[in-house]
Image (tube, rainbow, N blue to C red):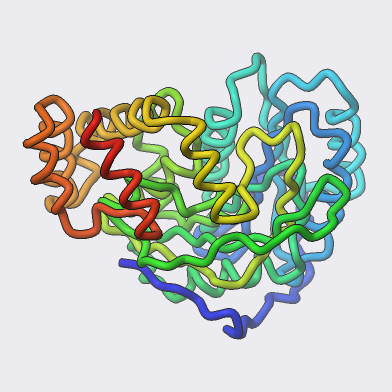
Length: 336
């Protein structure tokens, strides 16, 4: 299932003052709309302060920050400690990091801790972005529309800005309905916008992400493959910095995006595709029967020759967001 929230969609922000009880989860009841914000950092000092200030400016004020540092050697840890002191007891949770594990593993560690603490909604936060004030409110409102027992993932568009927050462009609109098996061809859920309900978090905690897959793509893959609800908000909710230290950036134009894909070539894409298909095939019990069948067919095609791949390309929804991107994907898939 998928849904797109229109740019003019209204939300009713929760303006209650946050609870500041001592301890992490003392008195917490599963099902409340407190959001666990998951922030993983690594040498993010140049940009971190602006992101932390944007959390304080959220119209949905009932949130707690879960923070894990992945081996920073700059002032990141000092800035986080100062912010924790400013928030006070019960609003800031430090998740220890004994060694550097990488971005995806660090975020998924935070997700597991927040889920174990009983939170109903979880939101990923990148260290170098700035959230617009309605970011959490829109996500909470979107997830509230889903059935409580159904896994749901909210994501949104972004305002692309440079390192100094000067506007560059708006990220591409969602042209096709998100879902499965389209999730195997392209990730439309940008990590800094993702929010998950508790069933989606439980699904991810029960899974094993493949090496080389980013946490946001794995979230989208698994929730879509499990028949979950994908909510794609057409309204930008974050200032998404584009700078020379981005782990993964966003091209500001279709031509640039196409050229970037061509420069990367088919090898990198097909390697990730094969890893994701293999990981889903090994955890087929987490998928719907139809998604399970599609994964098996795609896996067999990848191990077979070009003619077998032609039949798989006819699977409904096995496409990317635009016709040009779909054509390029099909060529690469045929080449193997």
